[in-house]
Length: 149
Ligand SMILES: [Zn+2]
Image 1: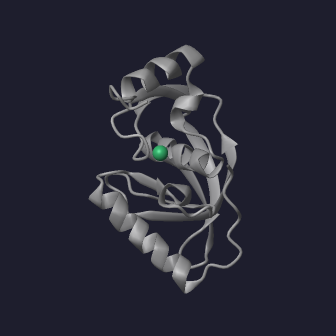
Image 2: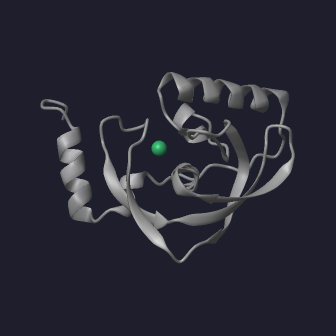
């Protein structure tokens, strides 16, 4: 399920982003998207090492590099599951921040990766859906504890 465009950067929404940053820190995550906290709004927060927390509202990935690389990803929505995912190494993203300022950001490294991961959440895509069917099945089989079904 895709998240909906934010039409109003209200005080309530800004407060939500603050709470999401706190929740992300509490879980030792580096990104958290609205749908992960039950809000089907197009917004996410990220905080990578040696950077400040960043808020992305109605983000659009407007450019991706042809160069791709694989890197291990995990997700707060499916704890304990990690897998190498191939993604473009550099992206340009446009969004609004919590102060309702529009910005454009060229991102590389872990920042580029987490932005793409969180953006996927807005599209209803989990990171392991980038993997082969076979690899997905193996991951999910290991994820389910005995007796879960
Ligand atoms: Zn995730």
